[in-house]
Amino acid sequence: MKERVQKFGRFLSGMVMPNIGAFIAWGLIAALFIPDGWLGKWGPAATINNMVGPMLSYLLPILIGYTGGRAIGGQKGAVTGALATLGAIASTSSTMFIGAMICGPLGGWCIKKFDEKMQGHIPAGFEMVVNNFSVGIIGGILAVLSIFVIGPACVVITDVLGAGVGFLVNHSLLPLTAVLVEPAKVLFLNNAINHGVFTPIGTAEAQEIGKSILFMIESNPGPGLGLLLAYCVAGKGETRSSAGAAAVIQFVGGIHEIYFPYVLMNPIVILGPMVGNIAGIFTLSLLGGGLVAAASPGSIIAELLMTPKGGYFANIAGIAVAAVVSFFLSVFLLKFFGKDASLEEAQAQVAASKAASKGEAPAAGSPTGAVVHAKDVKKIVFACDAGMGSSAMGATMVRNKLKDAGVTGIEVVHAPVSEIPKDCQIVVTHHELANRAVASNPNARVIPIKNFMGAPEYEVLVKEMAEGRGVSGAAPAPQTAAAPAAPSRILLEKKNIIIGCPSVTSDEAITRCGKMLVESGYVDQKYADAMIQRDREFSVAIGCHVAIPHGTVEVKDNISRTGIVVLTYPDGIPWGDEGETVKLVIGIAALGEEHIDVLGRISEVCATDEDTDALVAGADAETIYKKFNGLA
Image (cartoon, rainbow, N blue to C red; front, top):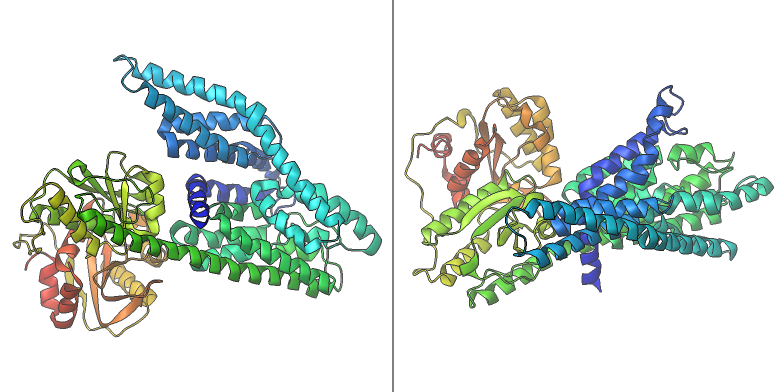
């Protein structure tokens, strides 16, 4: 059951996560320019507000349908999924996110099956005609089907959920309304529930006693705030870096929809806001909380403005309790699911050893379970977030190891995890990116690793490739240092080498690297400021006791010239969530594709833990200068 939930969560994540930017854009525009928004009274606000409805009704569902279709059927599947989604949208005035999550994958699946049937049967020269007409015809049929079947089915689901909420209210089971309210909100039924169920009943109650708790059941910003703060603490990569901004929009702007995709990425975390809201409703009931009228939007400011005199303590307590309970439970759930990546890695190593005797590529951590024989492997891809940093280093190391082992005919490249080539057979990636790698190329075997330098999986992979291809002397030869070559440039200046630094925090080490890069004219301050953000998004500790602080992709234009700075920490620095020990910190600034050369030199100098430790313990500034400039 747990495995199915995880698989379902990964599938939803693959549709929603690529479109988070659009959700944030919609949330910002709504928070600012709806009539009750922060700039709602500004002159042009009414015109700008005209975008809010179409974005919610059309843009976001179509983007989800497009992404879902592409995940299954490529570009043709994306267009077919978008067409099918439009049919669901046209069937009702309700927001069709659920319809999009059905129509998008359905469109991709249909076009994929059509292509499989037609493979080898299309006359030469007619490929484009068949491709275009197949998308148009299948997409049109699915759009009509969605109008009459999928759209109405989704409307029935929304009606059932609304009726369930009404039943709980009418039978005085108030805290239990959260059991239906939170899932219904995530299905974007929040406005229907709030204004269609709670507002009419709450208004009548407020006229009698001056306030109603019903106004706070859906609009309480506490549960969503707790969830988003949990992602700030326990999330990974993109979700962690985007959750902070989403929390501000949700809590201060009152746009609750902003946290719904974070639930859809990992459905089990809905328990956080659900239990948080139950605790919040119970607190409000106990202390006599409530509002004089509906809070719209559901921001902390709107909640306080609608609070009757003498009711601030009760209402603030209800919001705070909901946020705290949601936060701690969501952190627990995220941490629990986060550990599954390590479990996959352990299973991968067992499967790799088992596959070694069969001449198969390692089954390490592959959620697809595909079997790839070593003799059939033509391309191995190293994938990281941007496809430019640690993956390039890993690709270089394995490329050299395959060469040393006498294995030929295998192309080893690096790529972003979202753009893994479809013609590869094996993907090597960080274990935290394994699920995204599967979504990007479900037909490849995925090998999860903890770091891109000195990973033990490299030796297993090379050995299997050699044995599977019948190469004599299958065990890879020890990596030897290349003969010194005249460098095309000096990457490391002597003034930028600091040895024997006392241990500090990782943030302090990154800040010092950034300052040195700025002072040497490699980058500007904006790049330096983004270096810590990059480490927050994905740790720059790459293994072998090495960290390579650098800026995010967005600040590459702030690099003036290529260069590095080097600091040694003999006592080590605990780095990242997994507490990896770093003894050598190398700040990097690289123009264009020059980062490949920079990372190549680092991988040659620090190929193993022992290499790095020996360099840090015994080398002087002159030795470090020569090694990183290719002079020794």
